Length: 108
Image 1 (cartoon, one colour):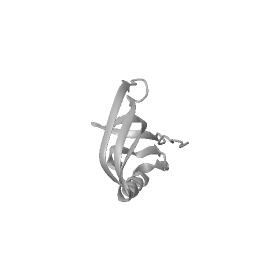
Image 2: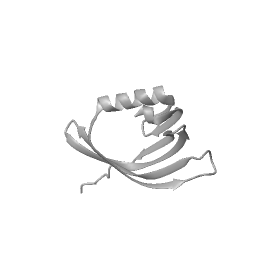
Image 3: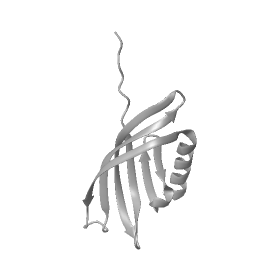
Image 4: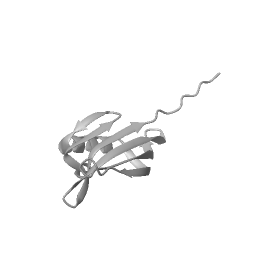
């Protein structure tokens, strides 16, 4: 995952801000070690910005099924990303992930 980022890329996630490929790689390694993702889907809308370094941004919604201690857990949220072209490759300059909190139900 970290290879998709620029060397100075930034990941903004619910568990913190991570800068640079090495920091982002460590974060993903720790995340994948802690929980098994059995399903992940992402829907996106893409917009192109030609005025700023030929950058592209996109945003969308994501869903995931995680394998928790008590069985599968459902998670969802939103994301946004800025991509820049370095040579012939598009890389992520910044990725923001927002996780929507699970609904809380009150019992009466």
